Amino acid sequence: MNFRAWPPGRLEETTLLRMTEVISLIVASDGGFQPRTGALSGPTFAKEVARGDPTAITIASPDTGLAETIQREFSDTIENRGQRT
Image (cartoon, rainbow, N blue to C red; front, side, top):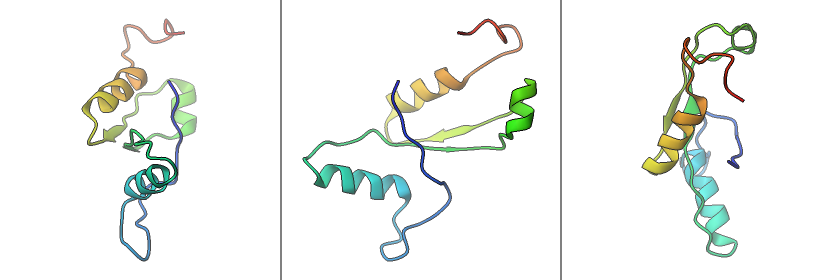
């Protein structure tokens, strides 16, 4: 799966658009491609994640398929921890 990350939590200063909206407009204007966008958020701290401590993230997207894919890719449970490749 290919995806790119941009800093969260900001609005574009002039238009007050969310970053996912800005990205969609810019990419679509450069040839008509409509990107699949979503915003990830959550209390994920690198040190805790590296230790395998529980953490949580949330995906928000108008694209249900993308949201489900991101949810599946980032999901983990105690039962399967360490078994994913």
